[in-house]
Length: 203
Image (tube, rainbow, N blue to C red):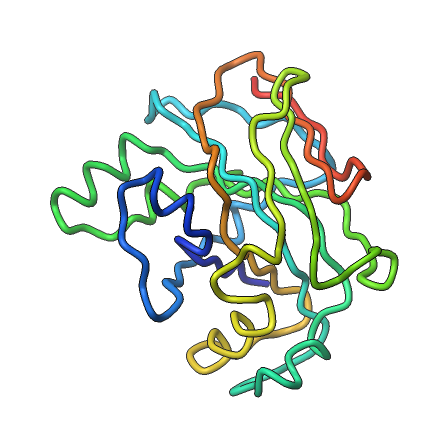
């Protein structure tokens, strides 16, 4: 199982990060050890003092595929949820300044909490999927798949040019604007439409 992700897939997030949009998706990977499931707590690592949440739709691949056409990409997933792409922002800044890879800022252990999967047919509109994150009872981030620069199908198609996708792989589809820091004692709850799919604490 692998975790593939995309950066800067919402225009307003690129704006808040003072980054430029790309004509092609920007892909990166998180390690298998990044995965955090079953609403287990996220333990704040001692190597960073600036961990940020990035709330994203997460798609689960359901079959083997390579060089998938966009018109067939919908056949390669049937479940979706919400996940958090935790980012050590201080380490990311250092890596950017030095021109180094970002793995230590993005792919560290348990940096990818993932919620319970929901069947695509259960959603009211699979092309207009709304999601949000509540932090300590307050909504801090909201998104909609219709606002993505590259749709889920486009992401799967383009990813599959470089990586063979396999059953069980997870694709983080990018975060909308509103990212921010977490602290020990914070309570995070993520919703897909109005269904709570992720509920955990920072310890």
